[in-house]
Length: 360
Image 1 (cartoon, rainbow, N blue to C red):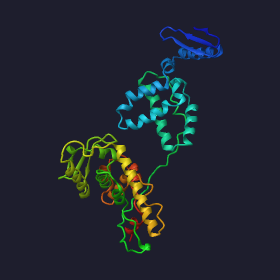
Image 2: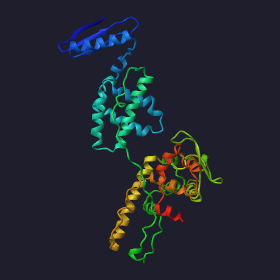
Image 3: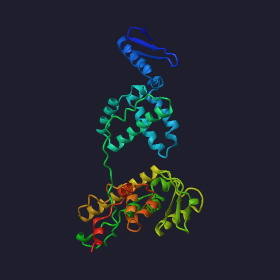
Image 4: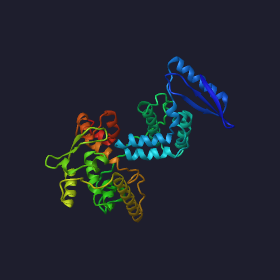
């Protein structure tokens, strides 16, 4: 039987005691709400479908996020990136609510607010983290009756495929007519503008091997065999190890770093992932500024696409497209580390003029 008692002037507490079940207690603003809740719980007990919501109602979203960060996120490869998403969720008003009180409508409202100022991919990542928090709470933290509010809402449609290819033309002679001027290799321009000692080797290694930024930064000399021209990656993004063949240019890039350090053990590049991206972005801005200054002095109109909209990760796209001209698909997947050939095709962007040359 359910019992009800008034708490203060504005609250009613309902309590249900059934043999073989933990006591269920919940407080409401009115007696009618308390009685409706009690009838629902007693009906579920009678039908044998009752699942206790006590822990879900006693745990705030903020507390669940903290536990998730300690027990789940900390052991992911993308722990640093996911931690920043958790910080965002902890800063919302929803973080103060209990897990059981977070509704799909609340999450949908927040989704719509974020989409006004953030890209769809960013919002989708945030929703994915929240969804996993609820999934873990239900499957591993004993909150079986907890509903996942993210499962019922529409997800933002993401269209972030990149097709940016890098200009690889040789620069024109200084006395060439303006109508025949070639802008030159964008990568070489960027490296000429950098103040970093190791960015040139990292960039050249990336564009020759299609390795990810994190794979390059975590590369160790113990796993590099310059004689066999192979770099071993014991742990990658998809959880598998792989061996990456090294071109002569990739070997030269590695040898240039080893000649400076004089070591054959430890990390090849003693640098963080974000530092690589920041150095690349700074060099790109300097290279663009130098190019604009050249155009101004020559009285020419600058190319709006040259040395713009270029990211470090585009080097992996460029490398994959180049390697696709050499290796068949089944061998290319072994080099790039893609498990799904559909994902690999997102990285392969042949130039139409290059394909035309293969036609009779």
